[in-house]
Length: 58
Image: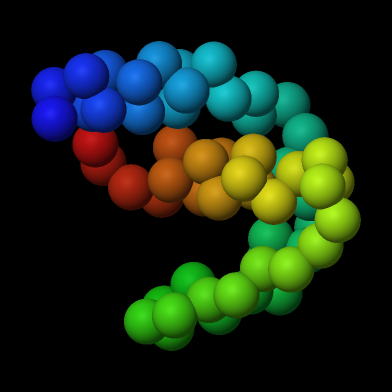
């Protein structure tokens, strides 16, 4: 389990914050379930990691 946490922390530290998609502001992040659909490689995971890095205290 500790290996998983370390991988997550590493991914989070390497996430760039210089560009955040404008779509980020249109998502209601207070919902319990959010579905983000799109093609491979368009930045879905990066947007979620940016949100975590910006708004969550980990």
